[in-house]
Image (cartoon, helix red, strand yellow):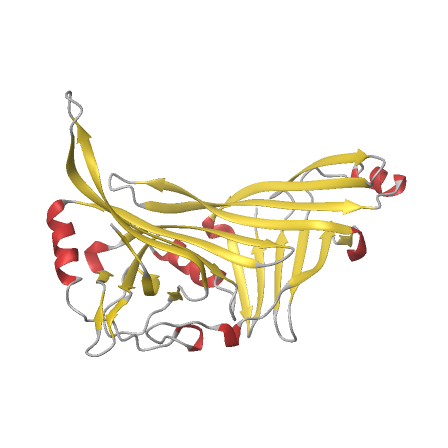
Length: 310
């Protein structure tokens, strides 16, 4: 089964109905999304596939909106590792209100959780997944409840807006590259940057219900430079550490800043230089990972500083 999502939220696993959520992520401004229910089958010798258990899964890719959602993701990961969620299907009728299902994953029906956070030349976006395998009794209970047009009235609005079908375009702020420092020094001028990207991914373990629980954060930072001189090439191959301290700054309009500081030893550096008729390029690739409890986030208004400790 699959259906359109009118509204979706992911929040802490111990959320109590009617209370104030501590870390509610609103799946608004979605680039893509899906909600799926699929049988998990057992294959017999004659080739028949017999339904046994049932997997419920939520996937969404959302654009950067307002305050960074990384602190909320980190809270969900470090609080219990699992999440609660509510998915409201598309409206079937305007009046009286009818939805194509209201699926509530609260309490013992919590879901596994994972994410991928991306920053590149053109955008900041996050991929979120929440899923779990249920037995047939649990599945029936979830589907039976989904027939009732009863949606959760959260006591706070995520990112200042939680309508029945929220889009938060008024809170959208463009972000762009500010600078990259290696060992506390600017390594290149912005005009010599061809492209860059930072990807932060949850590395998870799964239990018997295939519920993800993130244990580590993995990183991949890529920067490609053009107009590379012989002096800059020499400098790139003479870093005293192959895992230097790295500082990446992303800025937006006034009052919006995101900075990632990686301690020396967190990210290993690999270089790839090319000299061709069209252009001279130097690609820097930084990779590494840390336990989730070694990430320190400092939020001040709309500014975020993420310290990634060894």
